Image 1: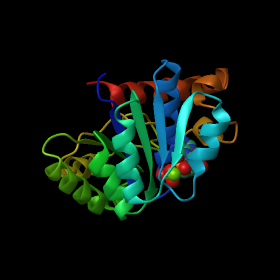
Image 2: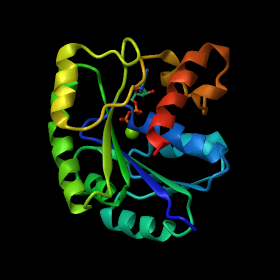
Image 3: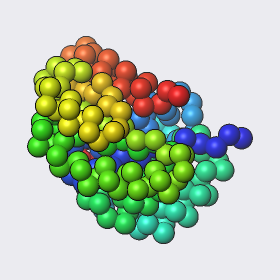
Length: 211
Ligand SMILES: Nc1ncnc2c1ncn2[C@@H]1O[C@H](COP(=O)(O)OP(=O)(O)O)[C@@H](O)[C@H]1O
Ligand SMILES: [Mg+2]
């Protein structure tokens, strides 16, 4: 069997959309009949409740210690099709462990210049991990809470370019994204009022999972 793809959602900041995107990614992959393992590495465990309530066949692990993440991911790598890791806020050894085990790390962030500046340390940690992984780790920024999809102000685009990381199209600020966890659902199952959110999320997930 092929090695699984291992995804990590991290950032130094909380509230940027790590959990929202990680849970949607896991649900989307599980719906494609893939064997998905989800590692909730945030002690707040907000993803865990949501994953359980989704009722999809996603294997859930709550692991906040770096050694546990290393061991579990190494074991899962022989059986899972995909592994999704939802990180805690901050640049702890847990965040570092995620970066050292993932194949693809995504840093969701807000759309303002201050959000971009706040990314500096997370980007530096990611670059360090990329060096240690010798080309086996890719990284990308995911702009979240955009006013218009794909639309960043010129100074924000410049700041994003300075990180040297690719910038995905991102998702806009929408009530449906905020409501999904409370409804124990994902945006493409939330009916007609969430159609625009579903379109955005699915195209983001396609970007995140394509080669
Ligand atoms: N694009 C968005 N539009 C509206 N609300 C959002 C969006 N992305 C995230 N949220 C909400 O913002 C809060 C923080 O998101 P969350 O995914 O928990 O971030 P993190 O895991 O980085 O702390 C949650 O209440 C979530 O529902
Ligand atoms: Mg979270």
